Length: 445
Image (cartoon, rainbow, N blue to C red):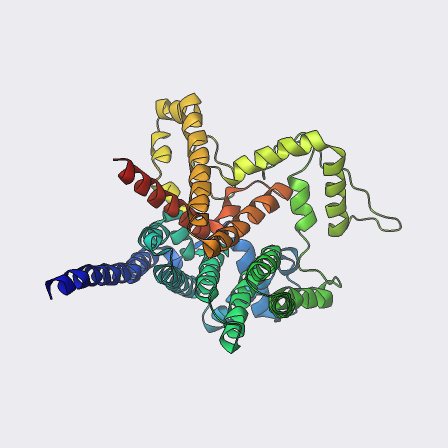
């Protein structure tokens, strides 16, 4: 009897610890949500504009005034998906629109954080769940972005739903439930793609790799057909709208312009371009260069200038991973709420402080910050891969959106804002790195 009691005691203790962690996985997102609601009610209007916020609200105004086929230029130049999602909310109330955006985006983010970490808790990755929930819930830049008019935080939430479902589905039989959950993963990708179409490439590669590694070729063909059909709904809606409004079956007309900003003989690769643009002449009898022609011209310039392309790729990579503030900060995050409390911003208020931050010491700290987050990212990636066969596949799936976003930034503009949509995934990998380092240190001691 005494021996049986000894066996039961560790199991009971483990169950109590597991239950305690589960409570934290609920408490962290709820507490973060409540804090954001307090912040929201202390903001004028209930929220703030993100980097492209005015463009999105201009698109919403166009939809309110003229309907789906509004000729508002912002709806064609920028992808219209995010304004289309805001349109029904604006129909309910224009004066309280920012309140609705902040509440809905914050609720979605809180639930996605819980869903993702709860899925981790019920898997072989459960030791990472607590710290992941804590870091994601209270990361000031990512979490507070739910109060801004912008797609970044909602897409980060979509990725948490995607990975959570992937973790739950990995050992499921290929039955009706499998296809329903698979459609759910595609649905979350579809929502992310509708808000920012560049994630269509991420979705296509995600399903191709995932099913190729875990299912038969027959299942692969059916899954790709189903998932790609679901993910193509958003781009199809935007292409149809633009075909009727501007007579161009295109998702948006800013890809070539964006690529051109980040290319050229004298520019650094960021938004603040310098020097002449990449030469691009229209095809006669046309007198204006189309967006597709600009894309072609930029690609041809990259191929013709490999050395400059490598230099720009390095610059854009540095910009993509650059800090939110300091001498190396590069991008469109001037409205980041973190900047209100960032130590570097306070130090720079005096001349001596500005010299310190902008000098060699500040640059060294910034480079260490960039290097540190990349080391933690790949440390966590490797730590998860070493757990088992499925974990190896999952780690690749988690890293894939991050790397593809990085590569897209290299092909367009270097901007640290572009890493926010995949920040929930990078924070998870970095949390896994912290746990791995802690475990190794504990064993060494």
